[in-house]
Length: 338
Image 1: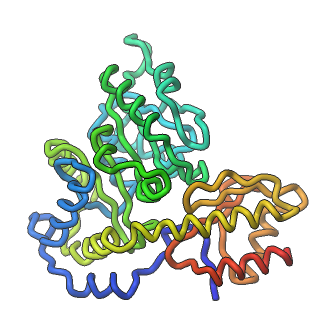
Image 2: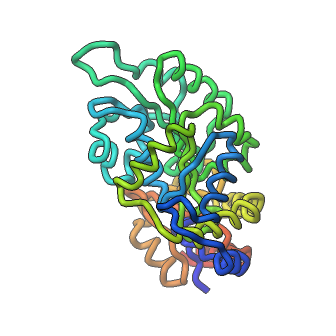
Image 3: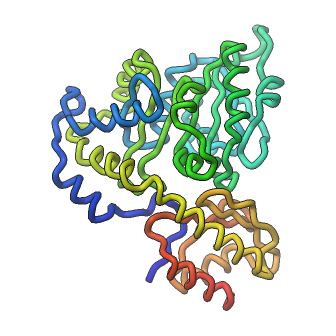
C-alpha cells in the first residue's frame, strides 16, 4: 500500500468520475461548441456569481492569463513572498506580462490591507505603476492557511479606492470554503478575476477555470490561445470537473480531519521541531537537526510513504481523496520507528 502525501494533485479519477468522462458529450472547444465545456464554464461562473469563466489546462495558466489581462508591461504586481504566482510559475509574471513584483512578507502566506496600502507606489516616473494585488486562498506555503473573509473585504475596498485590480489564486478555494464558510458568491464580488483548480482536492485529472466579467473572459480566451492553452474535445476533461463539483466538495472535510490527525502525530515526534497550524489539508513541519530531511524522506519512502521537502528541514504532506484512515494509521506506525 503506497501512501502518497506529496500533493493533492496525485489523485486518480473515481469510478463515478470515469463514467462521467466516458459518457461526456463533446465538440470542438476552439469553435465554442463543446457542450460539456460550456456547461462547466456556466456552472462555475454561476457558483461565484461571475458573468463568465474559461476552462484551461492548469492553474498556472489561469493565473498567468489573469495577470496578463489585468496589467501592462512595466506595471507592478503586489503579492505575498511565498505565493504560487511568484515562486512556482516559472517567472511567468515577468516572462508573460513584463511586470515586476512587489513582495510582502505576510502571515503564513496571507497579506493584509494595511500591508498592501504601504506597498502601493506613488505616482512617480521612477517607480512602476502598482496595478494588481494577488491573494492566495488557501496559501500553499502557509500550510493551507485561510484568509479571514473580513480581511479580503478590506483589501478589495482598498483596491477599488486606489484603482488597483484584485485577483484570487483560489487553487484550493473550496478547502477554504469548507474550513471557514466563506461564500463563493460574496467572493465573486470582491475580485476582478478568480482562478480555481479542479485537479487538487476536487480530484479531477486536469483543469482550472478563470472567472471574471464577460469582456475580461472574452479577452482571456484570446490570451489562452496565445499561451497554447486552447483545447479541442476538452469535454471529457470538463465532465470530470462537473462531477468533482457535484460530488467532491463536501468530502474535503474528511481531508481536513485527517490532516489534523497527521499534524498531531508530528507534534508528538521527538525529531519534529515545529508544526504549522493545520487549517485545511496541508501539513508543513520542520525537522530538528537530529533528523536530516533527506534521511526522513528516505525512511518514509522505504515504508511506502511519499512526502516532499519544501526547504531545508521543512516537509510538506497533503491529504486528499485517495488517502484513507488505514493509511494514516500506517504513517503513525512508521513514525514510531523513525
